[in-house]
Length: 125
Image: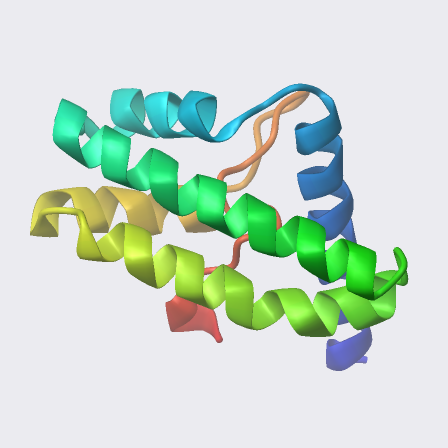
C-alpha cells in the first residue's frame, strides 16, 4: 500500500512538472522564484538556473525515450530529481539549505503548488 501511495505521488509530481513546463515556466523563472524565497545572490541564481536548465533537458530526453509512459518515466526521473536537488543544495549556504529543505517538504497552499511536488527531498529517499 505504501508503494502504491508513493507511486501515485510520483505520478502526480510528474504531471505537475509536465504541466509547469507547458505552462511556460522556464529555468530562469524557477531560479528567480527560488531567489526570492531563499534570498539568493545573483551568482547563485545564475548557477541554479543552469542546474534547472540541465535538469529540464534531461527530463525531456527521458520523456522522449520512455514515450510518455508515466511508470517508466517515474523510475528514470527519481535519480534526476535527487541529482538536481543535490546540485542546488551545493550552491546554498547552510541557512539557505535549511530553508530549501523546508520548501521541499511544505505542502501546497490551496490553488498553488509546493516546491517539493515532483521533487522529493533527498532526506526522504
